[in-house]
Length: 236
Image: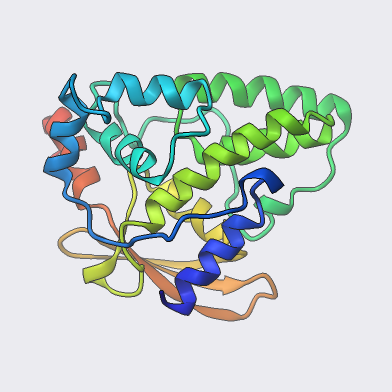
């Protein structure tokens, strides 16, 4: 395990409730998306998508990284998948998102109501998930916050499990471009520049929480674009 991935796991691990801080040995490998697609469509598979989503929605804590990996990446093959759906609220993704200012109780109520609505529409809106967790903690609803934190942690680990992010061959795979920013933010990094490389790679240059250059990471958005254009051929 590289120091980089160990750092990721430590960062994500610090966000887990005490009862869930025993993290799995995170295996990193490029996903076989055809295998994931077949498994998510197979009613006899433990990864059958409606069953996975039901487990996710009821916050089943027996659901670990293999299921989260199929849940996250398998969403690309669901009919309602749209990585470019518009959001009513714009969230700024930088190294302050996971250390949001203390909200008033009234602000917490507003954030909770909006975030719950947004997540009902898009269960993998990770930015709203972060906002919801912060607001729930602000209201003292720590048990509920821990449930959402568990979901967020494993969704982030599902992304991290797809590679190292250190080069194109090991680029991280995301199902939504905004997830790139949420993941890096959870690592206490802010994006300072963004580049696109053919055929479908993004490289995000980052700074640390002190504003100092901290390298950059690669993301593979090829599968995301393939599924998007399959559903929206008129935008090719």
